[in-house]
Image (cartoon, rainbow, N blue to C red; front, side, top):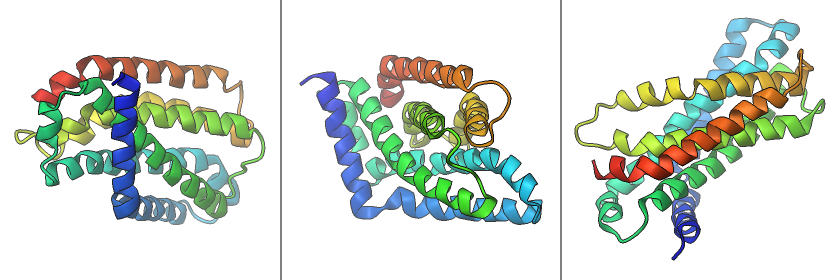
Length: 224
């Protein structure tokens, strides 16, 4: 079986588990909503300020919610005793990484669609200035987050790892996604200075680097 088919099987398995249990969305969506409402109340009723800060708040909500989704993707394997089976199975470990990453990306895109509508309603974020750039920013940014989370998610379930290790690894590495995503979203929604091409290019480069790194080294991380 080819690498792509093995990854597709892994992704379908994770997505079926999520559809049946809704573990990630049930945890991440309330968290994202609470975060946005709390920031909105703290910033006050000024409409202009809310619109200016909306792209940053949107991506912060996505970033922190993604950490919950990454943890859940591997926690399910540990609870079912399936993680050891993945280590011992005659399957390309790169396919496990890619499948996990694809499943998390699909889940996050569903979450982001809801969060974007929530931000548009709460902060008056415009979605019509350049929807193609907005969609590109979230698709590329989510792939990057999925690659980082898929790569280091297994470390969070290691018996020797502390619970705080995973956020300390993921959040700094995801900073380029956060910065580029906010900039591209600002250009798409508020018509910020300059174009979004360079920021989308940064997101695409980040995706390629971490997808390639994960494909090469994930097997070693999983076995450790």
